[in-house]
Length: 140
Image (cartoon, rainbow, N blue to C red; front, top):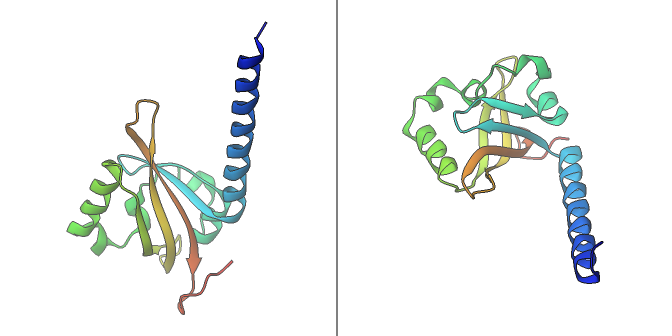
């Protein structure tokens, strides 16, 4: 049986977990989200991301981050710097040109965030974004 101090601590942690779950659910409902391994391979993407980029979930299973980028970007030092920053634990944010399933340009306002494991090491990256139209306005 828990003593009252441990019971209060457990209740506090339980409330904290519930709040985090609510925050994650809210982001998942309102933003386009995709996760990548440190090698750039797609781990998962939510429905909003799939919709913005014109893919189905089964189509992205074997894809890599570079598949959403222009060939010019992928060959550039800027691209290598981007991955170096993410792998070292830095977030990267801004407006990014990407390529959708039809080969069309898509502009994303995005934040790429390193996700840490229990030891505090970067284990993957998560992009949270929304699409901008050609005039720079949010589309949704």
